[in-house]
Length: 248
Image (spheres, rainbow, N blue to C red):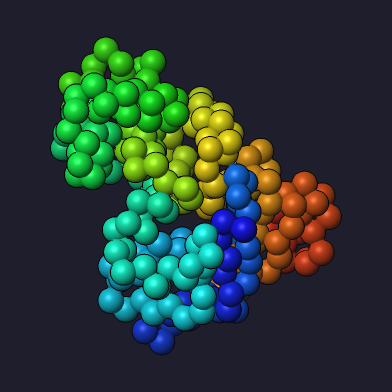
């Protein structure tokens, strides 16, 4: 298993966001998470690479084991976050060129050779399905790209650290259907190289992409199964109601 979660509970002050979550994420799978707003999906992602440390009111209990090692045991949290990358719902382009957005992390890690950086930048932009659109304007500000391109630039920037696990939090919520399709095709290719956890409010996106899907509701992991099995025959009525659009 790439990642194992046992008895995970998350609260913000006295508010319980998640409780009693147990699941495992396999190597080289796209693991989908669906559920309405305020179900605990984003909180779950935050706990996986200790982003809770940015939120003073957030308290995490339980075990999150990545590659056989509890994430709380990592002394160097930055090294952990290089292994577990994250892309948030809205793209946050650094005030740098397209090239420098992607090259920043490798430079900070000690890569100074221009030829090596060129290879890294091209490879990451290729993997994010953006290279063909920006290869002639790598010196332009990343913030001048379209919303969909900025989203893919953010993915390329996350990939520049060679993560083993990539967390995507409603990554396509602000982009058009054509761009969403391009990103989805890129994710299918990335699955060959790494593991992906995909939080999405678009249930059909989970059905298209995810190998397995979990349904979260009101801080509870209600159901988890192979995606086709979940969509075609969920056991819990709440899951069926959500997937069929009766609430959400």
